[in-house]
Image (cartoon, rainbow, N blue to C red):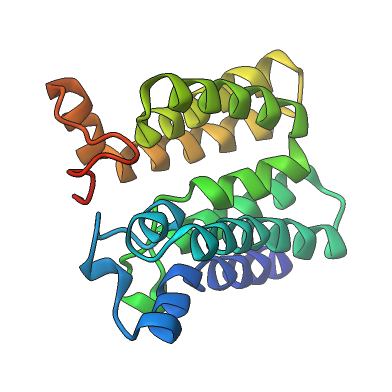
Length: 201
């Protein structure tokens, strides 16, 4: 039990390292959360800082999820603990203790976690998300499609039952973090990628 708790705690702290915040602080001298969408993540980095930094943040955020899973795998081969460590990292990314619990939306970190543990499901959901983004230019909609598809595909592909339940937690967190985007999508006022009015929360 003690091992389980400290792995989750360390995984949460790994997730709490906000690369978008610190890279922007280093490069530009300001808090990324005060500009664009107000989100500490790769998409807002693209809007506010540029493509290169955004790509770096996306990769680093994904690696956080992988690092948490790797930490658990170094201690145990129990699939539930590995997935739980990944979920803890996503929670850290979304609600980082180092930044007053104001972080990102967790999609890149989710990709890192699921790429290691449920690669086929991640690929199928990812392709669907990319298709939706290319078709609609709504990054938020693509992110929601990715998150919503994960538990369904994980269940269909017969991964461990704990993966299904924990992926439902991931989906719930994604929808909570995208709640304002969902409201705008329903109203038809959500900004599209590359549009002049996209810099909103």
